Image 1: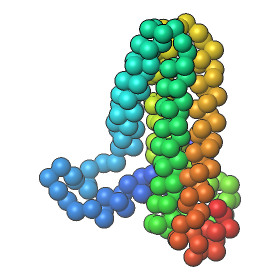
Image 2: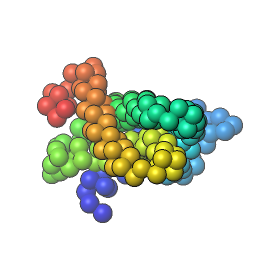
Image 3: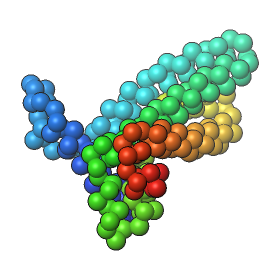
Length: 193
């Protein structure tokens, strides 16, 4: 395990632990329950796949009735924009939580490079906080389109689209966090972001 992967896991677990500690104990919620990061991702994948399948089936039916690729392109574009917005929100929220709980500042005084710290933040966003699970908004529709049309080029274009939108989402998320008041007050965080 590399340093960045360890940092990502530590960031994710620490944020979950601190947010659990801040909440009250209720009937459905137990703060002493073990932290499961992958269970949260599975719930997100199921929740994201449902609208993709619904929109995809409507677009495929319109394609079969008209013979035009326009409904498929519009549906895939809409889901791509939705994926970018979900991923951007995920990045902005994790970086904001890291800054709010002051988890980054102690690491910057240790013998860990800034690139490793931000690599851990990026991996935490990808693996644990919904950036990769947002791909479930696009993948089921791509599978439907490939199944109906038989065109495998759609797989390549959708991979390129998801990659570009994920990079855009990271940029938007970091930019939104850099404008937050917590970053503006700290010289260290201002320099890093």
